[in-house]
Length: 241
Image (tube, rainbow, N blue to C red):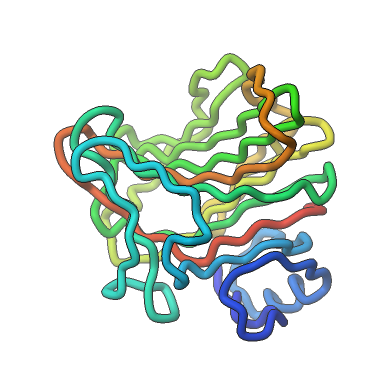
């Protein structure tokens, strides 16, 4: 699993915009992870500053996003995302990231399936002032598969999913990379495994929102209970290989 984040030369800040180049690679030299984790870091949030840095959506009875001091990958706390027990049964957090350049970008998150959610979703929504471009990967634990959102807005099977909920105390790292210059997927990574999504298109929708990129994370439940997950160490990168 991914480790080594505190080695970044970002001082004592816990979140914010940065522009790190070689320090990103140097920080990972001792990591047991086998895949290439390069890219220039432009935003880090260690999820210990409360909810002020996140856009939050809570759907359904009991849905909530809150600071959890009882469960953390490192530091004093994490964010607990609890899905609602009815409606679309989801809690969601998102960032509004300024467009640095139209390169390959990545979003990475460390998470624990502490409360046995049905699904854990990672998405990058890109807005150019005219359209939105949706790139979404879903880990569906209840179905046992990983899917990605296709050009029609439906789900396409990517691979079978190892049962990560068997050890809910474990932390995992997921990373989604997309190419904003070509508006296509690049790859998805889960712990030490990389899945190729090269040149696959996501869904396009008419949307006049100001240009920005919106990495998003969601925790889904069955609609009858309130399962939850914990998240730490959000990282957004540009100039991915």
